[in-house]
Image 1 (cartoon, one colour):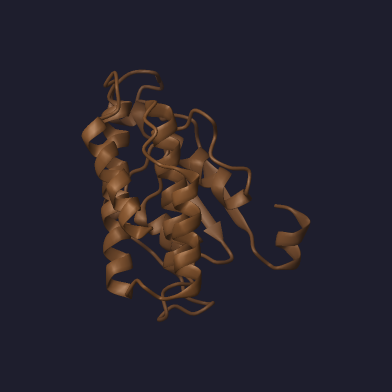
Image 2: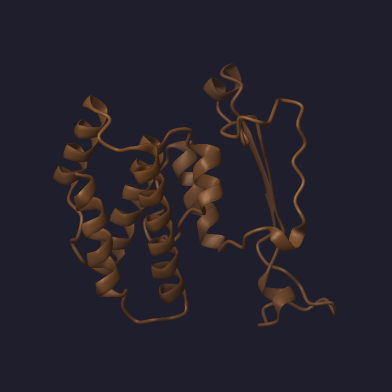
Length: 193
């Protein structure tokens, strides 16, 4: 936390481990227990986007219903919410729930997704996204409400799914990122601008 976040009462506590362990205490293998670890997040703005929740609401979820995330996703999330930026070689992406819990408007969510698409583009060596297009996108969305709520939600969902697919292929040791998906992502972002 930094001093401005304390003054604004914005804070986030993250507790996790760097790897799991098997029932016998070993780690580094390929069993589910060795590949997974817990993640606990608690923050001042958690779920404020849900209108039916109040400050005193306790949200509980069945553990089997919780989405899984990659360790690289956490580094990306921390970099984005602290303003440090996405780690240089990170393939981390954000889940829809993180997008909706940490960024309050579709405009902000689309900006974050755009940064993630640029990051994936840089890592793949493909120059699919340009900063010039981003400024046009930002300008158009600031001066008019060209996007309906429904259209923005669909774009966010499609982009998150696209990023998850690219990440999944990349982390499964595919030698190069899928150029077709990169081009599709570029077209999605071009449509926005």
